[in-house]
Length: 150
Ligand SMILES: [Zn+2]
View 1 (spheres, rainbow, N blue to C red):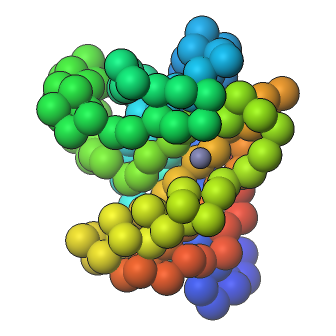
View 2 (cartoon, rainbow, N blue to C red):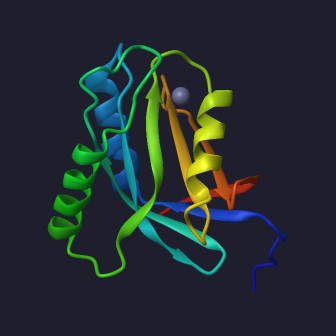
């Protein structure tokens, strides 16, 4: 049995999700790309099964904004295509063309978004070069994460 660390959110990221994010980030460079993380919650873990790319027509090198209409379309399409009964929204991702991690504003936005969910939400920031910076927030508070790939 794995010992649980209180408050620590385990995140299991499927290689499909990493690949989608890396490809979208590369295509958008030097602008930011971003989208949704899809998966499910499994007790103390968040499983990220897939990522979808949601285009922000006004993205810049330091900004990507989730366009709700486009995000909903992308979510509906991905759920239909992947056909997984548990699949739903578990967080957001975006890329940083510069080699820096999540900004104060990034952390603030995931904390605010998490207030609407009983379970933790994820923020994944893909940095230039492939490093990933991940944060989780539960009911408005940031939580430590441990990341595993699957
Ligand atoms: Zn950012």
